[in-house]
Amino acid sequence: MERTFAIIKPDAVAGKKAGQILARIEEAGFTVKGMRLTHLSKAAAEGFYAVHRERPFFGELTDFMSSGPCVLLCLEAPDAIRKWRTLMGATDPAKADAGTLRRDFGTSIGNNATHGSDAPETAAFELGYFFRGMETL
Image 1 (cartoon, one colour):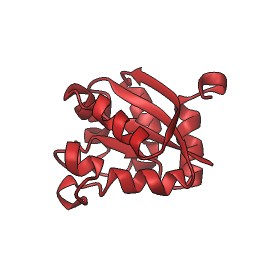
Image 2 (cartoon, one colour):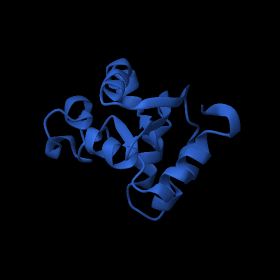
Image 3 (tube, rainbow, N blue to C red):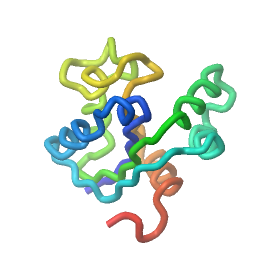
Image 4 (tube, helix red, strand yellow):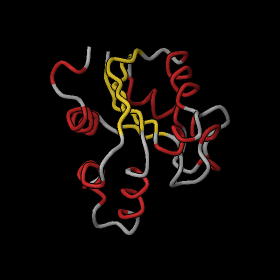
């Protein structure tokens, strides 16, 4: 079993899509091992996305991620990182495969409904950034 980190982003929460996304996560065979609804501060978003600090989209990304509530998730499944990234689909919803979360719930590259770790090291950092100690099962 492997764990990965996921976010249902502010656009999907505001659009009342979180429940549908969670249902799809469970239908795909993931077990939710940790979940929290939170409204990220700008500082928390900047810390989380620090790897992108020098990129031109950093300010827009952190403004968006701190613009409203999001759902933070610890997901578990065999090959969870690859499986979650496949379920999410391409970053650009217009280029994502039919039936993926971003295709079905995203509206743009910036407002693409979900986030997911891209490697075991990233998952470890991201899970540790938001979930401490006994907060996951």
